[in-house]
Each structure stands twice: as structure tokens, then as C-alpha cells.
Amino acid sequence: MAVTYPLDILTGFPGWSTEFDLLQRQELSRTAGGTTIAKDMGTPLWKAAFQSRVLSPNTLDMWRAKLNSLEGSLQRFMGRPMSRCYPIAHPNGRGLGDVSAVTVARITLNKVVTLNGAPADYKSSIGDYVQIGRHLYQIVGLDGGVEVRPHLAPGTAVGNTVVLVRPSVPMIIVPATLSTTADAGTGRGTITFQAIESR
Image (cartoon, rainbow, N blue to C red; front, side, top):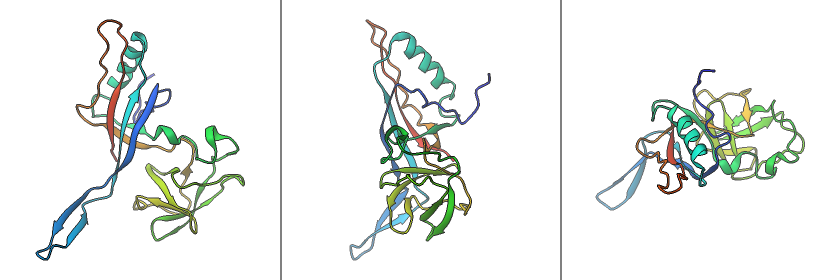
């Protein structure tokens, strides 16, 4: 079966996301009077760092091959924070119910979303992630809906599907950050790499 992109490389990844956060694309300037001004140079991008546990030689080689299928930084994979595969209030999906039909019901101020079709027992928490289309958002507030960052992407509309389980975003490996070094004596080793959102 042919490899298709963006690849779901993180399903079964024997490790963790040691970092998953927004990279703010901002510049600072100062006036003659000493006032510092921040300027947005674009929508923030998600950045991440991933690290595996120590792997046996055979498992290490298998994961080297999977990562090589990304052709360095040329191909995309679906990246996500490994700590937030499920909402905080529903560890391992406990009590979550069917979330396959959740959609955007209302949008306010381009950053607050009301959800439609969520199960009665579903509870949002600050720190949860949601995926709308190919964009990933983190819940930062719960007043009048779920307030997210970054702000909603252009084209986000009422009726868009909302993913609550394993929400992801297309990413690429940051060049020269992939390391799969093995111990010379045992052949065992770890995998580490950094990634950044790639729309």
C-alpha cells in the first residue's frame, strides 16, 4: 500500500511530545520615547518536539524507515500533543461518548466557538485542544462557549466539523533536528525530532 500524506506518524509512536506550543511570529520595535511595540507578522504556528523511549535495534530501524518516508522536511505528517489525545475531563475517552458529529454552532469575535452535537456528558476544559478543518486550536477560556487560540482561520464557518479526539495539524520535521543515534554496544537508541506546522 502506497504511503499517503499527510502521514499519521504518531499513532503508535513509542514516546512523547516534550513540547507543543505556539510559535508567535512577532517583531518588537521601540519608539524614541522608549515605548516597546509588538507587531504580528503572521498567524502563530504550532511547534513541537518529540522524543521516544529507548528502543531495541529492530524497533529503532522500523521507526527510522517510517520517518524516512517523510523525505526529510518535504512531506507532511499529522502532529498533535501526545498528552491531549482526549479532553482533560475524559482521560482515555472515559465517559466521552460519540463525538463524531460535533460541529461549529456559532462563532463570536473570531475566537469563541459554541459546539453542536457534543454528547450530554462531554465537558470542555481549559487546556484541551480542538481541530476545525486542518487547523488546531487550544481552549483558553470557557465563558459563552469555548475561547480558542490562535484566532480562527479565515473560512471557518458554522457547520464545520470539530474533532475532539486526537485533534491534529499538518506539520513537517524541522530540518537537521531528526536524530536516531544508537548505542554502539547494544544497538539500542532513541528518536528525537522537532516539528512545525505546515499549512
